[in-house]
Image (tube, rainbow, N blue to C red):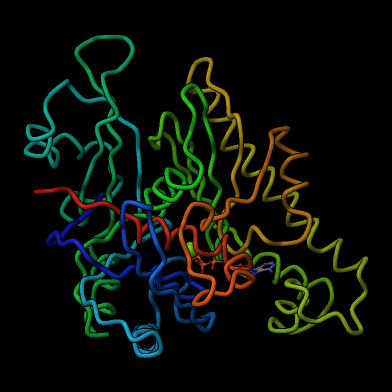
Length: 354
Ligand SMILES: Nc1ncnc2c1ncn2[C@@H]1O[C@H](COP(=O)(O)OP(=O)(O)OP(=O)(O)O)[C@@H](O)[C@H]1O
Ligand SMILES: [Mg+2]
């Protein structure tokens, strides 16, 4: 949980990604989480670049269009950030209570943040006492650049909404996993969210995110490689990648372009996971779940499985979400189940009863 401006029960969630905005509104009953509203709107490639808003007018108007199209009445909004403006680090602090840490976090965190401490907002999650028992505790430290938070909260406000929570993608994904793929005791899973421009990697142990990494690579790299190798426009390359354009396309050449990026991405993921495994004695990864629209690219699951030698599965964000088939076309949900990983995680966020 990060940067709650004020806490209320009902809120609408927007995952403002670099290729599209995803909207969900959820409700919680005894039966579980139910999808109330769901929306998806593409953004032009230049509106958000590598997690930074370049064209705020377009982002605001896309938000407004989604609100109108889906008749969203709620104003309180949950959204999230990702990419290089977000720093998540596991650190060791002297054992203290959550309140004590909240008081001293600015001071304690300073040495771990590569930006001036006044330029970032800081939050943390206590992971529990460390195993060596030296009066220390493990803490997940989260720092996000204030100017990036401002850019995102501004487009949300400009759209007439009230930003109440700004989370980070990896914690939203932890939430999505908790609902759909509860982790068994002793089981470590990795969630790889492949967006258009950013791939974020997290390792979840006993329901808590203990390791994160982000790679400045995603679906765009596939499109750009197809564009380069097959000498076509970005738009045509994108259509070829998702299988929307097949006429006049040499399938072997397309496969080869996709495979070269899949290979690179899989090795990058393996490198990050090896780093986690090397740093945490005896730890292993039992399974990799793929999320994000970019994970739908043909053959990626097999490639990742091959290169990492770990079982890989696509995460279905709607697996344990109730959705009335009369309102939400099951085929459409299946199509968007990876791209909505972050949005579902944001929409199912529980609020502290403070
Ligand atoms: N069927 C498909 N096959 C291959 N790629 C796909 C498919 N559908 C969507 N994608 C790709 O998924 C990517 C978008 O995924 P997602 O919506 O998770 O990204 P985002 O949240 O907008 O971006 P980011 O998180 O990097 O800012 C795009 O590169 C798109 O081409
Ligand atoms: Mg995204």
